[in-house]
Image (tube, rainbow, N blue to C red):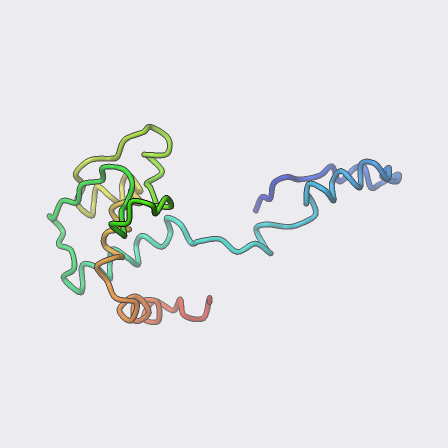
Length: 137
């Protein structure tokens, strides 16, 4: 596990200065993000979405979904927080047309946004439970 920002443990051996301690506090260096932080599950959850989408026929193995950048969940032109694939954030374009295998290989967020959008929350919850994930919440 790693958490950033970190701190120099050796400074505590002979006594850390007040200034350095305050610097660490201000940077929240003592907050262990891996053990105490809450974050979206990220790419590890893509397998759950893929299984749920395939088993419920919301997507097929050969169906191509076109990742063209931002995923629009609303037609409201004033809505500015459209989720985007990591690839778009890094390279300014989407992965293009991918099936489930390609989407898993490239870890395409857009593809799984689309499949997740097609699933109902009840279906998603059912697959969480069947995979033993309901106890994590």
